[in-house]
Image (cartoon, rainbow, N blue to C red):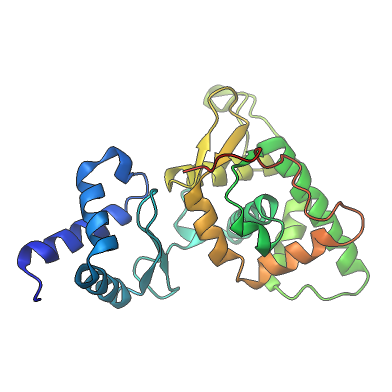
Amino acid sequence: MSLTQHDYTDIGTLVAYALRPGRRPGRNPEYQRVLVRYRTEQEIRSATDAVLHGLGSRVLSDGDHGLVLGVEPESPLAFRVSDLAGVSDDRGKLLAGLVLTGLVAYAYPSAEELADDRVRHVSERDFDAWLRELCERLRSHDAAGEVIPEQGLDDAWRVYLDMPSVVHGERGRGANQLLRSCTRYWVRAMLGWLASQGMARQDQMTDDSWTMTERFRVHAREVALEGAYRFLAEIQRRPGREPGAVPSGAAPEGGSAR
């Protein structure tokens, strides 16, 4: 059966929704309609996948949270750390990359845990302490003459440990606000960016706690293929820290973040 103009319009509509991660099919009947077509009609699925392939992208998941896309580095849809607001210099890029990769390793200490859809919670304070401890391990690793295989990671831990955990502004609009010169600022900034991408939600009771969504887990599977994640996962499994322990804990069995 040949696709019609209406079919191609639906394909474009579906891709447009996929590029707006804050949209959810459960809250948007039109999104739900075109997503069901992708799931159930082979011609629509094949044509959508072909369009995405041309854009250097592919579908990672078509679950209830919507169409989640993965992109190749050269894709016009690709996200780069330098695209983040406020990340303009090399130190900022290193910190942003370290925190984003660290969040995956913190929530999912091993690749096997990515199959577990229990809700993951992140406390800014606990995560900062955990990442600082991990960077101290990398410092010891470096002092022992052992090679850190990822150059960006080798540079990033030095920058992280060179900064204090918390520095608050003292004057004007910045009074009592976290400053860019502390690591907690970067932790909050990256969690805020993940929230804008539908991968985290700030908890209502406290501004220090976040819930990671199913969309985060889907993207975490891609990060888990990268060398920096594998190395961090290996380091945290070494003696001195309980293997697989996540300080904030996963939520009890019985629910997954969407």
